[in-house]
Length: 227
Image 1 (cartoon, one colour):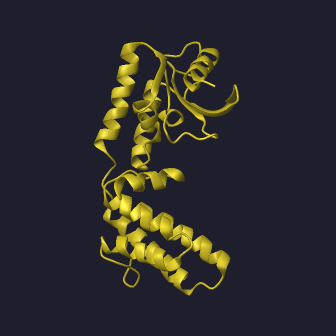
Image 2 (cartoon, rainbow, N blue to C red; image 1 turned 45 degrees about the vertical axis):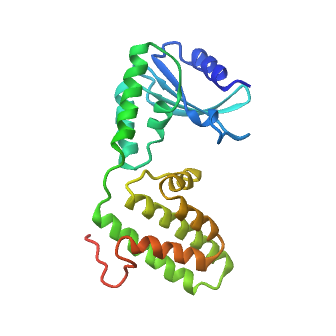
């Protein structure tokens, strides 16, 4: 199967009025697996955009992200606020499947500008909330005697620690595998420590405390959040 050719044919068959389309770069990268899907961003002039749809095409699982110019810019902003620029990355790092050179350049430049600007600075109140939450989880982990609960708490500690580290380094966040990929890019040593800590509460706690130490340490007594 040829992902670029198959994606181009799908766009032509489904969207005869397409202005531009991009195939996300993941399926063309070294990180492609047997279950990788085709992430396709489609730019239309207007309705039925915007919408998202999952389909199958020639054996591929496909995620379609269909937008007009205004909705694409709006969702770039939404993703930036969430610190997860997946849509901008699909465009900026993807392969143009079709579209006029001016339209492709306009959308690509917009996506690259989003990535170049980086995520918003973390809010101090958000950092304190995260410190408090992670401290509470570490206390739960230390006192836990149920293996199932320990596994769930441990994974939550892992996730919250990675997210806090990324926030403190001014990096983008990610979900699932992308959380580890972002952390490996931003802080390879910490990523290795956290991976080693999976299933090992002592190692996991040490890694979490190291990250908490970058922002004042554990926080529980005295924490107050406005209502």
